[in-house]
Length: 133
Length: 356
Image: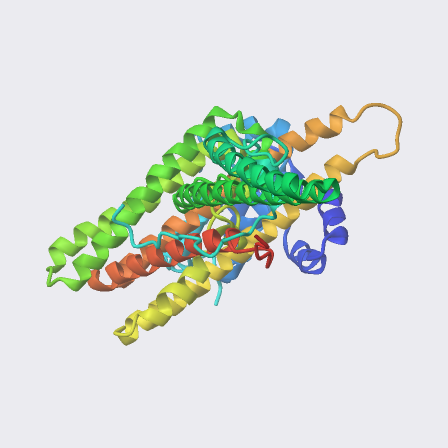
């Protein structure tokens, strides 16, 4: 958490970032915590700590009204994560950052961009209960 | 080349270079060296005449028997001779200038042609790391072919739209056009892995294209705003709405990627700046920065992914004929940018009229 807030105080878009951080339940977590977050939260972004792409994914989800929770993992936990999330995940080749909607693996940055442009992201999120409007 | 680009002939470049500069560039002609052989004969012939004059003069002198006059006349004759030689040298020099000017025009035409094909052969390109990266060299060659094919497709599209071709046939052109762009994106992925800085700087593009660069390529929202929207007149209400939504989604994706890039820049700068003025080497900082640069490759890939998705969505919203027009508009727009680059780089820089 401290690492993330340090970014926030130094960046030009820092204020926005700070706001986001308050909404997100973020943690430099282990694999088990991630798994429980994925099962409990409607929309979760699982990413490596300090990953810039994770930031992009979050912004994109927010642009359609989602409020994703973030689970940041240390590099050493990544392999363990793949095993834990394997059942609800998309298999071994799940790339980070990974988006989980309604407890199930949705995809990575590529799928988020594709569905956003095709105007499919919002309906898919709504369907899986990831938006409340 | 059956392209629609203009062959730029810089015919206004007469006497652009000062004589001194000219001489240093094409050093085969020197004012201090003896005149070339053909002129020698002329000079000799003249000197024969001169000797006649002198003879005549000296004959006159003998008749008058005044030595001072003789010297004066000889000096005058020598002056005439020197003036003649000078005129001949000047003539030869001008001839050389004219030849060199023609050579320059030829070279410039070749250069413009190469530039229009996207092979930047200007100084900035040559200065770039000596270009010893085989992945990049291969990319540049492929890109040259890509532009040639692009020019062909643009003129084919133009002809197709002006003919009374049916939708089925037109679809083939549209599919081909789209596929051509997707091929470029695939090429760029490989090149980005070879040298991401090269792709991020748009080094393979012409200078005007580089001005509009966004994460290694064109901005999809600009494509919708400037190239498509103003030129698609016969849209239905639904199409208009869909285009508006697409523009919005595009803009959001661009903003997200741009902000992610800013964050990456920040992290990268931080990694490099860590431990400045401290004792010890900075290899760890370089190592940390190298790791972060892998992320940059992902940004380039995702930006191209956005471009591809946008193009595909456009083709879904528009009718076949509209999509063909859209592709033609985009192709022409990029061609114009390339021509702008050529014209700009070969514009006369000094108003330096030849004094010859």
